[in-house]
Structures are given as C-alpha cells and as structure tokens.
Length: 135
Image (cartoon, rainbow, N blue to C red):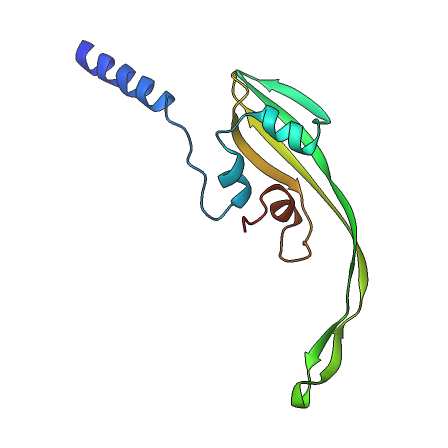
C-alpha cells in the first residue's frame, strides 16, 4: 500500500510540472503562451481588470480598436469585367477582448478570446491583431 501511495504522489508531482502546448489551430495561443504578460501588456496596453484564482491571476484585456472601410465585393463578370455586386461597402468597428491567465511568475499560461468579430482578412480580428502573420 505504501508503494502505491508513493507512486501516485510521484506521478501527481510529475504531472503538476507539465505545461499545456498551444494548439496549431489557435495562433494567439501559439504566439503568447509561455511568454511574459509584461511583454503582452507593453505591446497592447494594460488590462481593464484582474482576479485571483488560486496561484493564477486572470486578466481581462480589451483593445485593438480600429475603424476600417471595407469595400464592396463584386462577382467575376464576363471577360474579366466586374459583375454583379454581391456585398455592399461597409464600415467596420474592430475590437478584441481576451482573458489572459498567468502563473505566479507572470508567465502567460492561457489566453482566450472573449469578444471577437470577423477581421478584414479572416474570421477573427483578435487573431489578426494579436498574432499577425510574420512576413
């Protein structure tokens, strides 16, 4: 019985040291998990609030405010000419809100978008703003 208890305790300690590897499908996590929250807040502005949960702190951040004019879209017409209009021109008010979980040493352990809208070039403005494609 003592051996089983010691083995279970050792396994629990080993698993407690593991960190989550960000999925390739989430570019925001891939870019920021494991980095200092200070770098994030220096680049994008301070959080609007924070709360303690055990040894972690969860920060609520809001930013990336931008107004853009999205041009009308047209179908492909005959001989390469512009065809019928399929989407009107519009003004979009872009913004992002995220919850950032940090460990006791201020390292980002999780970043989750709370409010996101379609971006100019894709389905997520937060991904465009917080994890731009490297050129």
